[in-house]
Image (cartoon, rainbow, N blue to C red; front, top):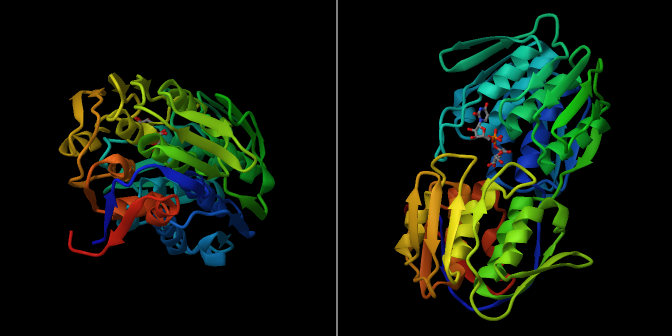
Amino acid sequence: MDRIVVTGNGPLSGQIPIAGAKNACLTLMPATLLSDEPLTLTNAPRLSDIRTMTTLLQSLGAEVSALNDGRVLALSSHGLDNHTADYDIVRKMRASILVLGPMLAREGHAVVSLPGGCAIGARPVDLHLKALEAMGAELDLREGYVHARAPSGLKGAIVDFPMVSVGATENALMAATLAKGTTVLKNAAREPEIVDLARCLRAMGAAIEGEGTGEITIEGVDRLHGATHPVVIDRIELGTYMLAPAIAGGSVELLGGQMSLIGAFVEKLEEAGVSVSETQAGLRVERKNGRVKAVDVATAPFPGFPTDLQAQMMALLCFADGVSVLEERIFENRFMHAPELMRMGARIDVHGGTAKVTGVETLKGAPVMATDLRASVSLILAGLAAKGETVVNRVYHLDRGYERVEEKLSAVGAKIERVQGDD
Ligand code: UD1
């Protein structure tokens, strides 16, 4: 199993290109199931989660080819010969549940394994199922699988989500494009990935209004056609690499970075004393002198501070002057990086969904490991400013969501390499 070895190496400088968004691509790919014409996605990220979704779609009979070194995905679902998303694939990646809505909407039936729990909490899919039931789906849960049927097609409905869910909004949005009549999604998620999905579906012929607000209205159409769509940039990869110069010092330009994707996060960086400016090609982050200031952070659905940047922000606050309080309000049990950061000398007290971080002047490198994607990268970020060598094990988590992390960080002067070895 590969490891990443990072050695604190002083300030960073240069440019990092930001890839297409993993989470957007993972919901755009299943949109192919809605049409028998080809869907082409450009600016796709090259990640193992994308390969897992490719395998899942292929198992259903879709054709998926990665072109241009994986940057372009050509998808086609003109003939689906299997309607069961198998446990062996679904258990690897929760986003697999996103095939349910589109497959049911177009084919009238679908069987999808329940994803089960994961490292960052229970993460049920009840909201996905309730939305589809409201549109007339008949659901039956048997032997770990959802058996869904809509023999005479889905019908438009008012779906009022009791809490904001990105995945449930995406599943319902895709399903509603082919439902008969009007669907209104209330308390819908407003994440940029939802906006990107709506744009792609519109390019395929869907009638959608209100994406990016809490209420999305969809007028069902008889069929969707082919389209070519560029995947929006990855705001989480962007935020992660913005933290590299914030932690190690220096000045780095994030190519493709957009302030509108990441406003709440930028506010917190600036509050901590890190400077962020817009450039022709993206965003520049600079930290020149002294330690950052402590800041309090609470995660929230978009446009709030993203839960997917909480672990990385904690890595910064470990070095801050003062005490920061981080509140995790989206997922229970999402502080697994805290004990690993503490092995590097960080001072963190976790109580339920709150972590109190007392900044220290420096951390010391250590062997660490993480049980999820964002936690792994937070350890790499901490390692950029730690004394000595930090060895991050279980790199496969990282490969799910960050393409070529060691190349991107080496290019701005970090001392980081991937080594092969036993886990
Ligand atoms: C997506 C992102 C993930 C991000 C999360 C929140 C993808 C592939 N993943 O995950 O990286 O951390 O949004 O921004 O896009 N919930 C329920 N019932 C449901 C669905 C969700 O109770 O049916 C709860 C979850 O347990 C969680 C909250 O709702 O507490 C938000 O989850 P949700 O927005 O659905 O996250 P995902 O779509 O799984």
